[in-house]
Image (cartoon, rainbow, N blue to C red):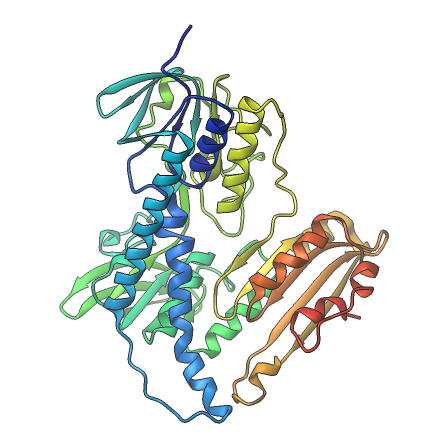
Amino acid sequence: MSYDYDLFVIGAGSGGLAASKRAASYGAKVAIAERDIVGGTCVIRGCVPKKLMVYASKFAHYYEDAVGYGWSEVQPSFDWKKLVTSVDNEVKRLSKLHISFLEKAGVELIQGDATLLDPHTIEVDGRKVTADKILIAVGGEAIKPDIPGAEYAITSREIFLLPEQPKRFAAIGAGYIAVEFSCIMNGLGSEVTQFIRGDRFLRGFDEDIRSGVQDAMTKHGINIITNTYVSKIEKVSDGLEVTYLDKAKNTEEKITVDAVLIAIGRAPHLAHLGLENTNVEIVQCDDPDLPNLHGYTVNCAIKVDEYSRTTEPNIFAVGDCTNRINLTPVAINEGRAFADTEFGNNPRIFSHETVASAVFSQPEAATVGLNESEAREKYGDAVKIYRAQFRPMYHSFTGKDEKVMVKLVVDSNTDKVLGAHIVGENAAEIIQGVAIAVKMGATKKDFDATVGIHPSTAEEFVTLR
């Protein structure tokens, strides 16, 4: 049977873009459908605009720190509208760049909502096309709790488009999105309150990362309200009134802010895909084959095997909609592995083991491999911990009480480094290099035999005793 396309991709985010271009390079006739701006969560409303705002939020600290090094004190001012306009312009530039990459690769871009009519037929805004293979790469979306007034709150999608800076800002959530935006808004001068249900945020990360970041954020003036849940958001004359239960006091408390960010998790964006017209199986979050990664709350996901194949033979899925590891580089590698396997005569899988990740909080945190509790559960008493906490040299003259934490988790039976963790400035840049060693199976002796760059924070990983 002949089809209109060899491959039809639903979703022009990181995974879909990577897969479509790679498949086209092998000579496949490819089309990709996108209902939103081309680029996906990362480019439009995720890691790229967020990181730009992280950069912006750090300048206030630099102005303060400079005084200790002999620079005269300044009284800086901040222009929110200029920042969000610049960020939006950069997002649009990158989106256009991705469209040009598709054109150069020979991939047809179809704007609109794509719905599966059957395993080989897709409808996009009234237009019906057929494809031999279909790849679903629709990503995820922020979810909101079922509480009164949730409609008044924003998610990570809207925060980049706020016309005015909220002087009083509240974040609901304990994952890295809530943590990062709490730090961003604090750095930009807003009064920040963060609500979390437990004692610590960043569930799934190493305990030393969780405590290191949370303690530092508290020192920076962020009001972290633990052991609580928000029960209502109400619009009042001077802003939004947030009602929450203080579990420790067993009392109902209220706070008024200008904006409320809900960041309790993300769920695969499976609505209106027409999956019911196929044999694609959906798994629930309590399925043992569906891992939880770093605090994400997920309702359901598309079930796939190691080759990203769904339970429908010709339909595949990659990225956040499969809820394996919800990170941009992972989606890209899943997409390329799929294309190599199905169109490049190079069957291969992408390994989800030992994937590094970072939290762009202030201070930053980064990790690769097993955390201490995971390692002890798997290796028991054989686990040995090497850890150091110290004041970084940068703060010798600033007078600030800042700490860096570096940690190695080691299997004493084999001397293999099972995990590496860091809290501190440039944590993500440092862990990227360490991740190579951990991925390759380096031992503690390999780390010890490596000469450190002095003076640097990174050298602590090779001097731990």
